[in-house]
Each structure stands twice: as C-alpha cells, then as structure tokens.
Length: 330
Ligand code: DON
Image (cartoon, rainbow, N blue to C red):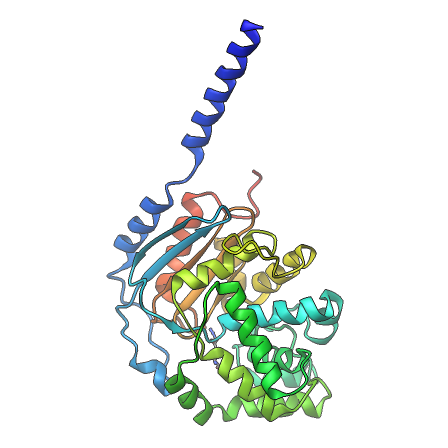
C-alpha cells in the first residue's frame, strides 16, 4: 500500500512538473513580440474608408485568451477599433447555426478566390457565386441569409450574436459607419451583381447597410480574443459557459478562416503559420489554436492584401514559440 502511494505521489509530481515545464509563458511571449515589432513601420493605414485613416499607426495591442478562461495582454489594450471584416466570421457562424454547414457550403462556398477581398471580377467569373463567406460579396450574402422577421430583427440578431461571443455590450462606431455608408458604392454593386445571378437571399440595400453596420462595431483586443476563444473551445465561451455554436460546426468555421481569412494572403499565411485566422482593415486580427487559445492583435498599418503587418508578425512569433502550427504532429 505504502509503495503504491509513493509511486502515485511520485507520478503526480512528475506530471505536474512536466506540465509546469510545457505550459507556455504567454505573458512573456506577448511582451517579447510587442518589443520586437513595435518599431516596425511597414504597411499603410487603410484610407479607402476615410474614417479609418484617422487612426494612429502606432496603436499596438496584443491579447491571448485561453480555453481555461485566462487573459494575457500588453500594449494599447484599452483602444477600441472597428471590427470590419473580423465581424464576418461571427455572422457566418450565426448563419451556420441557423441553417447548418451544408447550406453555407452550397450558398456561400468554401473556396479561395485568389483575388482581393472586394473583387467584382471574382463574382463575375463564377456567375454570382461568392466562393466563401469571408470576402465582401460572400459576407453580404451571409447577412441576407440570416433568418429574421425584418431589418431591425436582422440587426438585433447580428449584434446580439457578436455581444454573446465577445462577452460584452458592443457598440457601433457611428463616425466609421457614416463614413463607410457614404463610400460603399462598390459593395452595393457587388450585392446587385450577385442578385442579378440569384446568389443573394434578401433585399440588397438592407443587407449592405446591415453588413456595413456590423463592420463598424468597435472591439478591443480582449473582446476579440474572447470571441476567438469560443472557437478554440469547441463553440462554448470559456467566459460565460454558453454554447454559442454547435460544436460539430466549429471545424467548418475554422476551415473557412483557413481558406479565406486573409484573402489573397491566406495561402501564404497557412503555409508559414498553419493557423486559421481572420483580419480586418481596421487593423485587427485573430487566430485560433483549437483546444488551447486565441490570440488577437491590433495594429492599423496593413500590407497590400489588407492584413495588419504587425499582427501577422506577432501571431507568427507566438505560434512558433508555442508550436501551434496545426500541421505539426503533436
Ligand atoms: O466592406 C469593406 O470593405 C470593409 N467594411 C471591410 C473590409 C475588410 O475588413 C477587409 N479586410 N481585410
């Protein structure tokens, strides 16, 4: 008996020591990344939406949210920024929850376009199929697919969904919304082009406006990391305990992110980092390590595909240090 107890306590000691050795020091890693990349001034703040051009290129924040509910953060973590394309992931998840992954695949697709995120050529080449829910065309079509009684109900469902994922009461950045509404003729044209091919599932004006509104919702990196942590945790928020997406659908949401989360930069990203991720032209980006953590970074200067330069560098650094590439045998 005594021998058994000794063996058990020894194995407990060994396993806790091993755990302590292997648990990554997230706090140190994000601070190292912040230090390493904060003076990199590559990239350009988006200005095709005039209100976005007013954000400082210096803003830089990093948050990691783990599946066991811990938060690690550094930098300008109090600064909120518009979600822009990041919002597309969570409205796609809502549409998937309502209609299931088969309908999302049939109506919105799961293919890279290989073209910029607002390409009209991409829609024309496929005779209206948006190819995936993360390019502008597919994201507006997704909004039209959300089941709702009317326009107000559609917006409330989308905002309530974002709130539930972020564990927060998010608000629309009205100056950004107005600026984007004044300059979204290209998106209106994309929606009408899809409608002309019967690839739109509601009123185009209503969907474009609600899409624009969801893009203008402000978040912090903490809120965004918590949203990503829901995906890392099989669709259940580690913070509220609520199941926000059927756990069976989580791989499909992550697959769409891997396919098109960084638009025409998605292939290179998957090749070098090996994680599903999503960017927004406001400078935010989130990546998901299933079963472990999500990392959100905010830094406005973008590369030519519209993805934050420092966010990509930071996530690559942390992903490598934590051996998080999904294609590595673990
Ligand atoms: O529709 C647009 O162009 C913007 N509201 C969102 C685009 C975006 O964030 C693309 N991201 N990298």
